[in-house]
Length: 142
Image (cartoon, rainbow, N blue to C red; front, side):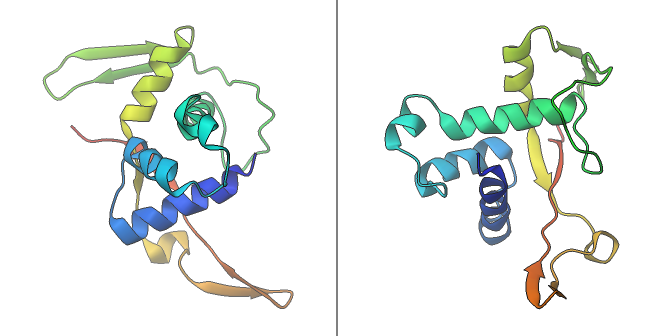
């Protein structure tokens, strides 16, 4: 439901305010309310947080930019991560809420190389100007 507009607004705020963590950007979306949804959905049902968690879970479980995503998960069952002090962290998709919370609290937007990723330039296509944005999402470094 208008998720590209939400993602574009998050990228805009990231570029202007320097906020990179997705949890902090989502909090900013709660106050900006770029989709102009009812206040009750934001405060009572945490709409923007819910949508971002769904997006991150889909990314972790198989959604890729070059393919049309039909909601089918890939063979990925979860993640094994090693913290800076050697502690092994395990997240499985069967415990969806914990996995979503981990992704939500530990991901950030990253800025790629402008020349390599070809974003940030105005392009004209069929008489219409476009401004390409680049959304790279990675885990927060510890």
